Amino acid sequence: MGVEVVVDGLTKSFGRQVIWEDVSLTLPAGEISVLLGPSGTGKSVFLKTLVGLLRPDRGHIWIDGHDLAGCGEDRLYELRRLFGVLFQDGALFGSMSLYDNIAFPLREHTKKTEAQIRRIVMEKIELVGLVGAEGKLPGEISGGMRKRAGLARALVLDPEIILFDEPDSGLDPVRTAYLNQLIVDLNAEIEATFLIVTHDVNTARTVPDDIGLLFRRELVMFGPREMLLSSDEPVVRQFLNARRHGPIGMSEEKDVSELAAEARLGQDPGALPPIPPQLMPTGNRIRRTQHAPGAWLAANGVVPPQGSFVDERGRNWLEEYPRLIDAHVKGAR
Image (cartoon, rainbow, N blue to C red):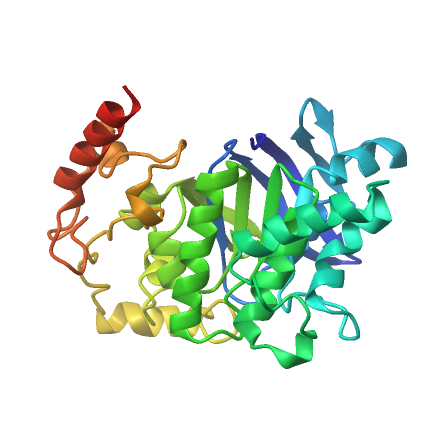
């Protein structure tokens, strides 16, 4: 079961360079959140600060009633045990088999017997779909398999918070789609709190419950997926719809002359595209923290773009989701 993470007024700099300042957000317990932003906006720095590898200049990170940003080493060690981290490249030891890579945290941080370790490792290997590959070295498998092995290692201590640092980095669109489905299925299975840092717009539009966007050293917006996908905030609209028109330029932000030229040309950012359905767990399961399609829009009086919540098979999830919930309720009786 995941725990809530409350970030309050967090600021981080390296020397005179401010990375981001006064960042405040809440990662709801058990939900999937995505953090977006142009390259160089400090998304990976945020993850390292969240897990206590970097200390912020000021601010608080509240987890289970404890401030990770201000606690001592002993408490910090205990809080870190709540986290699992999937690094960009998997961060596997090249000379170890996948089995030994995944077993490493258990051997280092617990007093479990080898029999107990084997049971846990094989359980996680099955969970990420790597049964039969446990004897291979990282150099003998594909990038997608290395990501899954890294994820299995992140899971072996049964963390309540899992951080994903650009899990789609280096993967083709098909492998990214498989990984996204695995992430959603895992969340349905273990109900941990997930935070994903990514550049992939399709991942951001279809996977999370909540989305945040870092830009110009601040958190521009953080909230429910439907709130950001229907937002008219220029940088949010530009990034989530992958368009050139807007504040983001090749060097993170456009200069005054570029923005003035766009204004003179009167470039229309265009209509918002339809909001896609959220990716469902396999087998049409329902995640415990999943929100009904259109719930935020209806509660806030926002009309979605035409064609929203219709999948590639033509199913309208405003209609499908209630039927799915009804079937689950009847099945539970």
